[in-house]
Image (cartoon, rainbow, N blue to C red; front, side):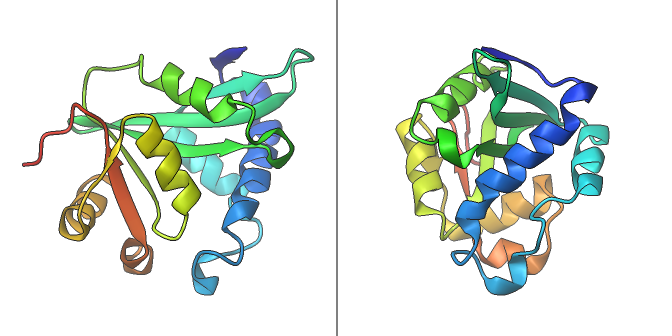
Amino acid sequence: MIDDFSSTDFEEVLAVINDGASAYKGVIPENCWHEPYMPPSELREGIEAGIKFRVCRSEDNNILGVMGVQPVQDVYLIRHAYVKTDAWRNGIGSRLIEDINTVTDAPVLIGTWAAAKWAIQFYERHGFHLLDAEETRLLLKKYWSVPDLQIEHSVVLADQNWLPA
């Protein structure tokens, strides 16, 4: 079942994010990895900045996956898309992205680590296309607030509604 994040979900969502993000350990640049990957303050700041999370729950109401969407200027950004490691390869990410895709007709962008080949392939399977390095750099500076080091190691994918400027 997919539904909206509620404040009572905070700790469980944070745990899912940090568990799912463990896939990046040893893959992304070492100076970009930290424990926990997402501290509670960062999740709170994201929620306050307008990220609306959707959660996928098991039959016994445990959160198995989370995906956030944030309207920024003229686009929607998919933010913090994670599935619990023991629930990988069960269609949870696919269900969440299909749900998020019903939110808007505006272009949808997703930024991820360039080294996360599995994530890039996942988004490509769901109709997103990888943008070139120059457009990625420009979009990360326009729509995200990320450090230059992260920009150097990131990619942006866009859905079929994206028309380059």
